[in-house]
Image (tube, rainbow, N blue to C red; front, side, top):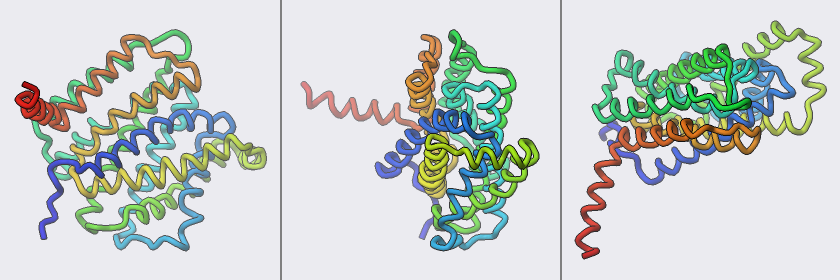
Length: 313
C-alpha cells in the first residue's frame, strides 16, 4: 500500500482545518485573559499539566522513540508558548499576535525544504508571497491605542512562530519513523514534557512565594482560560493539526493557519476593543487571497465556473 499523502484535502480534512482555525483564532483572547491573573511561565505549566496529567493513565503512549515526544514538547510547548505568553505580557496585542504567529507558515516551508526534502510548488510560493504582503500590511498599519504593539512583543512573537515551525518539522519526522501513530496520544504525552521546564522557569522568574500565591488565588476566569488552552487549544486543535500533518505535506497544511488572524482580529475587537484599521483589513484580504492561491483553489474555482456556465444559458 502506498504511503504517499493525498494531493488534495478531503472535505473531512478541510472541516478539521477550519475547526482548528476557529479554536486558534479565539486562543489569543483567552491567553490574554489568562495572563491577567497568571504569569507567563505559570500559565504554561498549568496549561500543559491539565492537558497531560489527568490522561496519562488512560491514553497509551504512541509507539515511537521518546526523542520525538521530547522534541515536540520542548519546541511547541516551552519554545512556542513560553515565548508567545511572554510576548503577550510585554505588549503584544491579541489581534496582532494572531497575525504575527502566522509567519510560521513561511518558516515551515523554509525548514521543510532542506530538512525534509518537501519541495514547495510554485503556486505555494506565490500564495505565501501574497499572504506575506498582507501580513506586512497588517503588522505595520498601527491603529489608535489598542492597536499598538511593542517591539519586544513583536520579536518574542516572531520567535514563537519559528518554534511552531520547528514543531511542524518534528511531526513530519515522527510520521516517517512511526507512520499511523495516534495523534491524540502524541499530544497528551508530549504535553507532559513542558510541565517541569515551565514550573522551574516560573519559580526562577516569579519566586516560589509568588507562584504559590497565584495558584492559591486562581479565580474562575483564570481556571476557565487554563482549561480552554489545555483541552481545546492543545488536545483538540493540536490533535486535529497533527492528524493533518500526518496525511499531507507541511506546505499544504500549514497555510490554513493564515486564516487564524481573521478570527483573531475579530475576537480581539470584541473582547478588548482592538479596532483594525482599513489597511489591516486590506492585509487580511490579501492573506485570504494568498491561501486560495497556495491551495490551488483558484484553478478549481475557474473549472467549476466553466462547468456551471452552459447550464445557465
